Image (cartoon, rainbow, N blue to C red; front, side, top):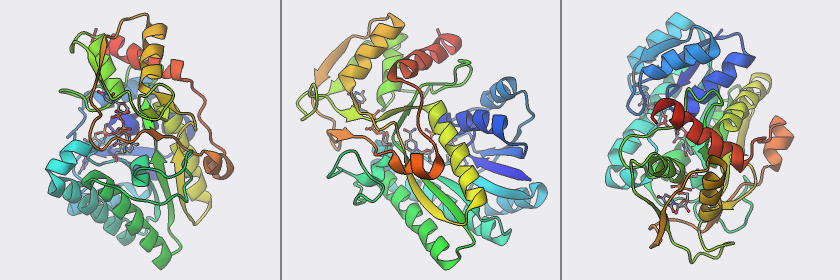
Length: 334
Ligand code: NAD
Ligand code: UFG
């Protein structure tokens, strides 16, 4: 039996491969076009897992190549991470996002159907909750979104739901991630986007390593504990473990499940920055600037369903997340 991991050299995919290699004996096949990752991750994964991981550089939009993979490796389940994820870029280049994320996913699903492979774990996002009416956010909350990236996730969720309704022999786990940060404790893999980062932790890291002068904090007049935005930061290794539990669940149940993966705790930007400064004993200069358009005040998960259905909950603290994020950079850049 083989499991296909699309986007497996990316940030969350690579950490999930590490957790997977501890828990399954199936052959692990990674497919990635390396648009937002590089081949060195494969060598790093072999070092951490001490396993031979098969890597195929290809695009999920290439249906013929997918057919070749399904024929050659007898894929029995898929964890589907491959996608573009920058909200701002999706507003500028909507067609790129709709093509890559939606057309790519349809290409994958068509091949899965053709080869009677009906088990899939899909990377969705808390972005599908838009500006939530109630906190913590339950999976039953109203769904809405304001940008092409978010629409692509919502549309794929709907496509997967329609597929299940038309054929309940599928087993589908839709995982709605909150804000993953941190890195594998080995320090060998982690997140290191090129250019100027959009997200908070990668930006803090660039300031910590003096590649950028100071952090801009987007607004301090939200209705939150200290006026700065509140998010549910989750350690990427905990998130990866959630995929193992979800895979186990769909291997044993023909269902469609939609589940939040978060810690259930919200921390403000200032709380995160101050924790990073304290645990790593490093200064992070910051300025308060205007709010970032489209940002919401607070977002954190209700985690009861994940506990009940998957028997999963996060374990690592905000301190762990800050230590491990910086540890990866110390290993790889400083
Ligand atoms: P990432 O960019 O690090 O990883 C995605 C990987 O997919 C990259 O290696 C990229 O090269 C690959 N890829 C993109 N398009 C592809 C295509 N058409 N064919 C083959 N490979 C392709 O991102 P990540 O943070 O690991 O996110 C993984 C998934 O989780 C994405 O679908 C993302 O939308 C979703 N997600 C991420 C976050 C987050 O904050 N990181 C939050 C919610 C949801
Ligand atoms: N922030 C700053 N300065 C920065 C970057 C971010 O103050 O330089 C603030 C934001 O205003 C927000 C918080 O830090 O209050 C977190 O911002 P991120 O950009 O790190 O994360 P978001 O919650 O805005 O969005 C992320 C992903 C989305 C995903 C969402 C929910 O970028 O794709 O989490 O999973 F949908």
